[in-house]
Image 1 (cartoon, rainbow, N blue to C red):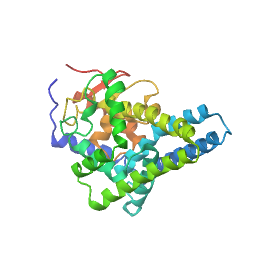
Image 2 (cartoon, helix red, strand yellow):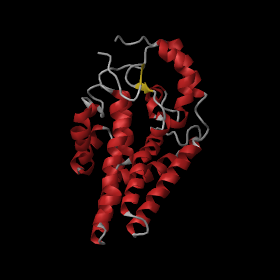
Image 3 (spheres, rainbow, N blue to C red):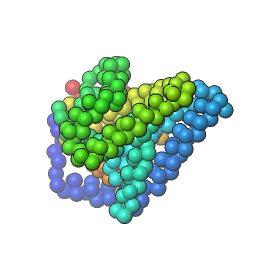
Image 4 (cartoon, rainbow, N blue to C red):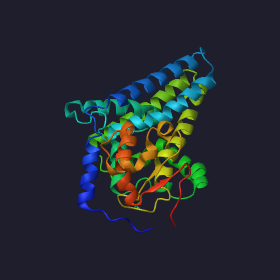
Length: 290
């Protein structure tokens, strides 16, 4: 399918609509962050000390880790503070706190994600590793990408690639060390099994599900570029709630300053324009126009 033509007047109209959906400050994201962090700490403590079954803690933490990336994603775009430039520190604070259970490093991930936006579906896109079929993604490419989270050499290479400053690189490696020190302390204290059940397994499952719904599905088959075709809209019952708005991923790429909880109303306002531009809209299973 040919790439829809972008014209200045239409983009101006789109941006005017989008601006109406940018809040003064994203309080729902703050609440989401506090609830998720509280649940992660409470479930880990209660299951780790035998107050509730380990399997129950594992289920809670899997859901939490899946959802927690939404806070990180909002923070790297400055969408927590939003129009309140005097509250930019809230983006870093919540972003760093929510990065920790995900084994992410705030500045590293922020610059990697900005590169994704600048080069979506191009060979230089940091997320291009997701290109390919579903089974290869779930059983090979996604697990391999997760294993690289523990690789300090990979972290260094990507820090150089994405242009982290020396201070940002020091902070990234300090955080990397704190993560490993936390794991070592838990194992030394006799909580190796609890670590496995309450952090590592939930991390693997939650991250693969999140990456599938944030990275593979929205951009599949990772070949098309341009404002209206480099990602899609997925419409199916319950998607907005279960995917925390990422079924409207196209809205995010068009206007990254809009918070996740306002993707749907923005889409509804923009729908006539988007349909006229031939954007990809499908259901639960992504389709490819080839």
